[in-house]
Image (tube, rainbow, N blue to C red; front, side):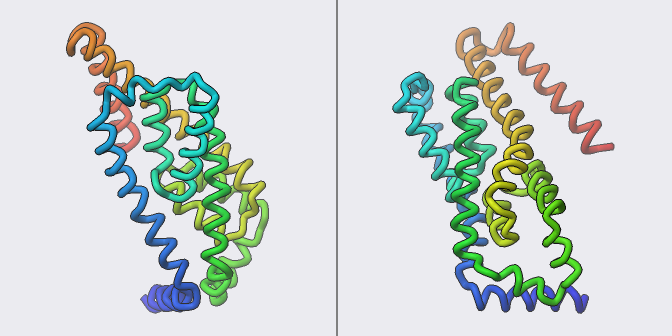
Length: 232
């Protein structure tokens, strides 16, 4: 218990020395959820107009790239939500642009996280030399970036701030972060395209035929994954 109390005292001291760090942590913890709720409201009110958006023009693709960089890099939207909506609205044509957007967004988040965080992590870890030495090992840093991005429970915006405080370096962030993000981004994006197919089947045929088959397979797969992975 004493160690925990000491750690939290160090954390409070770090916040006092770097108050903007506390603001940044609050921002990356809260704003993606707020952005998701607002975006869902817009999607619900304008389903037809959004379905008619054309991804073919280069101007629209650049606008999509810019929106993605700012939305994900400034922690206005979670990457998983942005990927799922992109798959639903635009299909696989948008995936390359999404891949570029989240990598550039990672650099943006890393940059502003470093500016706000300063040397606060050094202050926090000054009394924990073993942890400090571990984080200074460059090969461990690469693994940390990869597995941090791979984890479905560590939000993109939080990890950007965390990697900035660790000073992982933008090259490691791009290379290992990109590799780590790719599997879950592919999965979420693919889920968005499947949802679009299901929506189209229901809209054209009603919830019958292919719609029922698709929905049944989806439910069985979710149940199977839960039973094998979660329950076991």
